[in-house]
Amino acid sequence: MCLVFPILLAVSSLHSESDCSCDVVVAGGGPAGSTIAALLARKGWRVRLFEKDTHPRFHIGESLLPMSMPILERLGVLAEAEAIGIKKLGADFPAANERGYNVFHFARSLNATWPHALQVRRDQFDELLFVNAARAGATAMTGHCVRKVEVLGDTVSVEVVDAGGHTETLRTRYFVDASGRDTLLGDRLKLKQKNPRHQSAALFAHFRGAELRPGEDAGNISIYRFAHGWVWLIPLPDQLMSVGAVCYPEYLKQKKGRGTEFLLDTLRGIPEVWARLTSAELVGNHHATGNYAYSCSAFAGSRWLSVGDACAFVDPIFSSGVFLAMNSAELGAELIDQVLHEPHRERALQARYTRTLRAGLACFSWFIERFTSPAMRQLFAHPRNHWRVEEALISLLAGDVFRDGGVRRRLLLFKGIYYLQSLVLWRLQWPHMKFLKRQARVAFEGGTTGQDHV
Image (tube, rainbow, N blue to C red; front, side, top):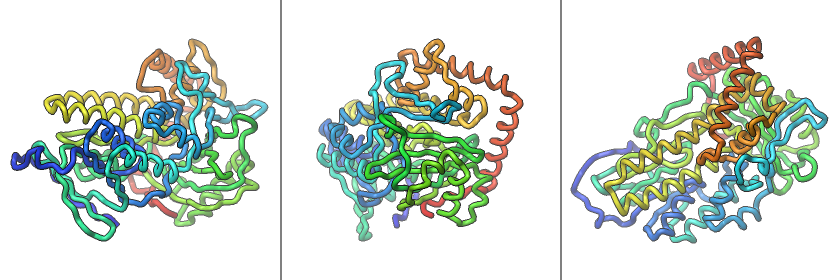
């Protein structure tokens, strides 16, 4: 177990950059940390990458987005990622038609994006990226936990402890928090803020032998709504299926330590889901995680930067986690490279980095917070491509939120359509809004717990 001590931010002129044993220290060896470490090492900087666990290790978030694919290509690991993944051509949502669902294919996005993504086991995927960071020249170590960070003028002191309890103190020119949901700096600097409008929790596990979609859609992610939240089905290699239920706090109060039984009962209560799991076997990796929607009030500061989930985490309904992590890592690598060359530009570059990330997060969050509403259900069940709005929505599902190309304008139009639909369905919409407010109150009062394992 890694004991994390308070992070100290002090200003001192006692140390200079010439004292540094490396240029950048990265805390966290997930997709964000490994990506930024690889990119900075390629630019010639001396990078130390520390991961507190040992790869391979289980992690949720197995569904990638098409906009992740160009990043994998730039990292030089696209072929390796495709070798361990399942091709994902789109996402499907329930609909009242012959099939019972609509498929939103990425090839129909508004702008030219990658026509597919991948479904991956994160233990394999994360290890691949970590090894690639070492291959790029970073000193990458597992079983090492960053427990103390102190900014000293133009340098940062970082204390690292290994699995045997040995402590090492490094002097670096820049520190990157890629600690994921541990939010190393976010917690210690009291930057982390829960999202009061979206306080759900998730139960998930791996099954073997679940029913796939037919034909080329066999690798697609399936999303189902139910009275107490929503469910994902993600096909994985070796006939595995990742199945998760994201539930409202009020419903989870019934769990009371029942763990696997509670998850199975939840899935049995959704006929469309259980029909695909009837012949499947639960094979493991059953976990639970609570109250997980949050954002930090600052993504950067003097001589430090946060990337990926260390900045913010949104509900995974649009599978945005890995893409947002790797995209922020790419942006962060460019920022740090420029700051190390031109330190006087740090504040301006960090401000631009923060604006860019917050704009993308806001785009996902608006849809996520309304996804279970009657109006949104109606629009996803009966998509229309007037003014190419459906294509813009597919672009969002593909992760194309950091460039314009007409997507943002059409998503604004979609928002207008949503609000009009909400007026039409006000008899259903209003009770739903009241219900969500009650869930937020239940979460605030401690109705949801956040255990990592069941």
